[in-house]
Length: 498
Image (cartoon, rainbow, N blue to C red; front, side, top):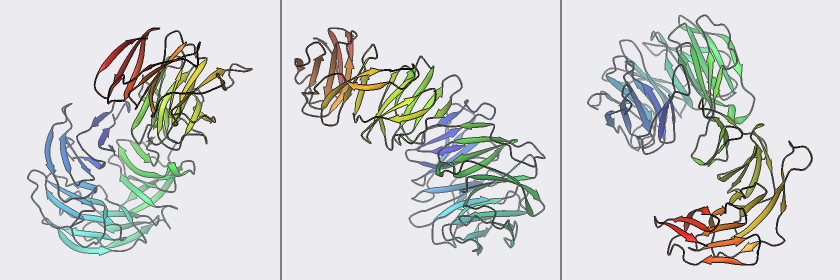
């Protein structure tokens, strides 16, 4: 499971492209977990809402919805009998709650801390125990049901990011921002030992135990995932795999799925490792699943490369194989630093503009960015691909001739196609479109007007004043060289003969 924005993503076990999305939360989702039975998933969000929904039907029918407290829920856990749930986060009046799944009735209190809870877990066998880790560096131990405070431990210097029980319940572990992992007795909570010295060089964000073999993995901000052998009440180091030492490769989560381990990085990528029973080492990921972390703002399909190109509000761009659903991310120092507003294709190149006031040319085959000195908000190529029209923030229009000099693999260059720029609108331009013959260009604006420009007579324009009265144009499309279709915020579609 992966939780992001206001959605939950469930990946197919055998085919990662066979995924499913649950979209019934209204705000960002922080955690989602299967029930022990596998028939339900519980997901929790920033408003403190817990939704328990069916995994069998395609509609994912809602079974229960609760709000244990008002505020973000960071983690949740089920008891092994599917009957109780523990949540932790940052509520207005409390930081955790434990309740019956079928009724929402409280079955104890989560106390002993004064700052946000980051992680929670239940002992998977009876007698049940509950544990929490929080921003004070505290690991809190609860007995029940009904659950109540028993003890707390402050072994970590800094946040406790994760607490997890072993599968047989004989011990539990805590991982913190100090890179340390500590072991505690599963029934009494007593501290047993520290794992490693320290376990990681960066903060530990996730720990997961295998159900197939006595193995455990930990994921860290040091960009590494480590494999541990579980023996009685100890963890013995076996191997690690390290990603390139860049910020976006920080590992924030990991979980076992059968004989595979899925690890999630800060970039939002999901890396799948094959870890069969008896493994002593970690091989490189068998598969890495990339995509956007934030909203997709624009998209174009390249028939030449048979790839879908998408861009996001964080400036990232992806090239998708539509047959597999897998993506590769564009890279390079000239990438957009903020939201991409528009995409246009030119052969094996993609041209983008963003609110960072930059126009970027990128190679689809090489997945590389190269910047230009143009700063438009909207762009559109003429039908023959020889002229690029750019609408600028100052309401002006510039035309550039696109040429490929020398080798056909060289990046195309942009040169001014006119000795002057065009200015006629009194407000920001919102849409542009070329006529089929490439001799006329239509522009729409917030000022309610539509202007028709001519390459043959650059100084003469046809102005449709108040084309959509009291409403700005949102789209323009030529039906023929003299018939133009326009749409606007007034909900109407109009056809003009020009």
